[in-house]
Length: 283
Image (cartoon, rainbow, N blue to C red; front, side):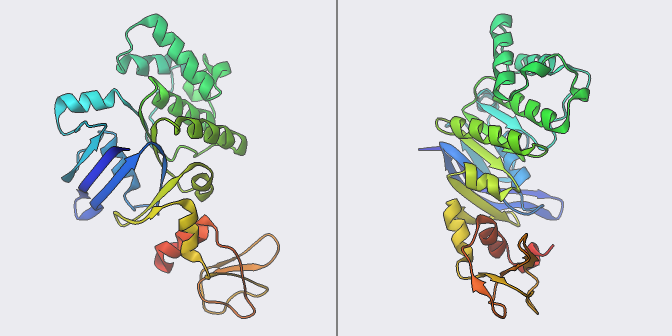
């Protein structure tokens, strides 16, 4: 079932094209967006979150068109959005900030609103920080607070821009468990630079490059983009710049087989780097 439809979406900033004639259908589940900086991921998410109007094309979510004022308001009631920089008010306590956002989301019943604030604080593991000022929270805690505000009202559409930035391994594990559960009944779209998050969370991944989707499929299919192109060798390749030394002291190379190189199973990251091409991967 398609819940979000993007047709011919384009957005420019001056002479720079951020999103270029993009078509994409998204349904229930967790979809990951991968791509280098400047690929258009954040611009796409901002258009979906109704924070930015496209120059051309259209977006529709749950049958609602954000270009129409009344439908845009109705869509905002059904979505939760975590931007890259949530801009949390530093002098609010965690609970007071969520209560304020809940008011903005039209939760007018005080008793139910407070219960909802308690619920999302528990979801992200911040119950014991409810009365702490935002400025005194660690970076990871502020990121989790940003996620909590996106979860207010149990939105049908959850849009998350780099949600795991600043999270330690334990927090990332809890985040994955929460998003996996939410993705069973809702549409979750997240952008990330963490290919391991894609492998752990996403049933579908879209890779963007220069404003276009250059891959749309499963994480396994993305890894297979590098099939027969990943090698281990005792010495670094002489001409190929796409290599690194791993923890065992061997050199992992992407591309042509180096001298005495043995083939290895590709990872999602390998497929992603091969798909982008050496001009992006070596930056």
